[in-house]
Length: 287
Ligand SMILES: NC(=O)c1ccc[n+]([C@@H]2O[C@H](COP(=O)([O-])OP(=O)(O)OC[C@H]3O[C@@H](n4cnc5c(N)ncnc54)[C@H](O)[C@@H]3O)[C@@H](O)[C@H]2O)c1
Image (cartoon, rainbow, N blue to C red; front, side, top):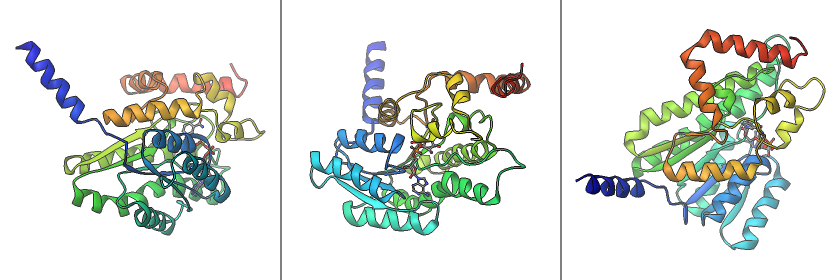
């Protein structure tokens, strides 16, 4: 009997695996960094990939690289996902080219802002528009079709900061928490209607966003990020993301220790906050 149970469980798990070959995947923020690596990794799995970014030349170069290996399998769409129209037009262009979208990866993000008293209203708006509202606007145009079809996959890039916090940047902490909250809400609300949702929450990744934290006065100090754990390459993050999507795991954690940190946080909030204050003091050259 136990043998039969195990094999049934194995077949069930196998059936649930997301097959990426031939799927239509859209990745935002794909001109460089994590987004470019995700697009390249999905393409290597055999997906047809729409690479999108506000950086027109960057996204054209990434798409051209993919097209060179498999003609007709990649398309660059320039779009500012920090606007509702940008999301609408991106989804429209992608579906016109490759048909219904199977997987949408809302990855574009910005690391702007510092504290509550020295971040401009413009930067607060920018952070919310790109890190949060972009995900909401994409979901607004994707979810009805996915529910009608009984399937669809929404992935978003939040950050470990969305589960923990971001020392040095209130806008990043708030918006990444909101991104996790939206992904959770979509999974709870539409999971039984066939929508699958995953949320990518890395710590440090070796991209332009991380090196921007080396500049004087940056809110998110790269030294603080580096002190939290190993800095991964974008390709390593993409590899973990593909495995997690195959297994339909909600939280994508390229840095496994983030789960331990999150568990410590929820187990004893006051102790966790005290530890974070010590980390912040150290980052400012204090005790
Ligand atoms: N690098 C890290 O350490 C790290 C850690 C955790 C989470 N993240 C998150 O990963 C995601 C990707 O970041 P990255 O590290 O690759 O940074 P990156 O700066 O290299 O790439 C971000 C991309 O997003 C694009 N973008 C910015 N605003 C846009 C807009 N309005 N519309 C369309 N595209 C836009 C940029 O042009 C850029 O190509 C972000 O959401 C970021 O917050 C990064």
